[in-house]
Amino acid sequence: MAGADILQFPHTIPRPALPPAAAERALSLSELQLGIRLHRQLDLRKLLELFLEELRLAFPVEGLCYSPPDSAECFVAGRGTARTLRSRLHLDGEYLGQVEAQVRGELHTPLAALLAPLAAPLRNALQHHRLKLLARKDPLTGLGNRMALDAALATEVARAQRFGQPFAMLIADIDHFKRVNDSLGHGAGDQVIRGVAAQVRDCLRPYDQAFRFGGEEFVVILSQTSLAKGMQIAERIRKRIAHRCSMDAATTGKITVSI
Image (cartoon, rainbow, N blue to C red; front, top):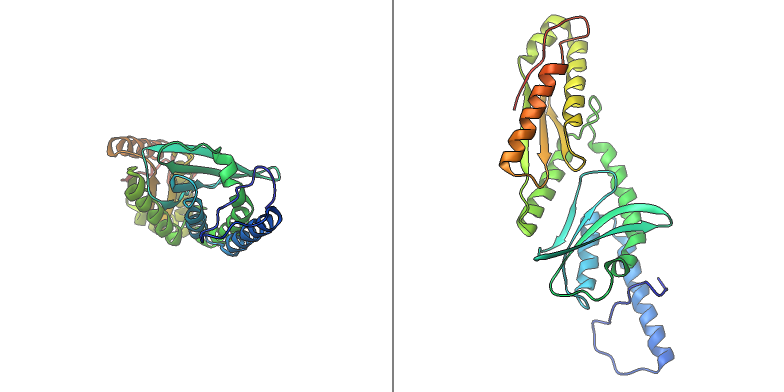
């Protein structure tokens, strides 16, 4: 934890003045104890909350929002403010994602320096989170499953409540899907579901998320999206599927969805 760019947190309990050598040993112990606490926490949201609790003791930071590098998820701690600062996190050449800090007033220390103690425990928690995500994938389409949808909705609701950011949710259903299974068999039905899922995914922005809700139903979460914009994206998805999906490669029967 040592280094010129590493954040040194103050003690929470007032202490009598110490000789320089004793003070340095006490500060190192405080940093070590914090490092141990952070490394023990493998839940990304709880890790942010723990780190924010320490950060608030010395700096005007009221909230943190962490976005991993390989997903549209966002993990939120604290509350929103009128001013937001952003910093990209790296450790040993590995990009760990972006952190938004909600601050009140001026922050005189660079945000990257404040976030330095978070990098190593965050990488551990991110690896743990990625393993958990493997259990949240729908095996047929590669989209998120119901478990992943529940977690994503909780995140978006928390972000909307704390930071005042809107989001939209689309629910899409393949029209007359039963006739595909009845006329062509379940193998063809699976092919249609995979094809629709691929078209939905291709219509989305990098920070949007798509899920297979069950059977022939899909859910899309559009982060930071108004109702009007959500309607535009829904129409884009609907048109793309109608133009590009058919019942199978040997027929011209078109597949459509209702959203």
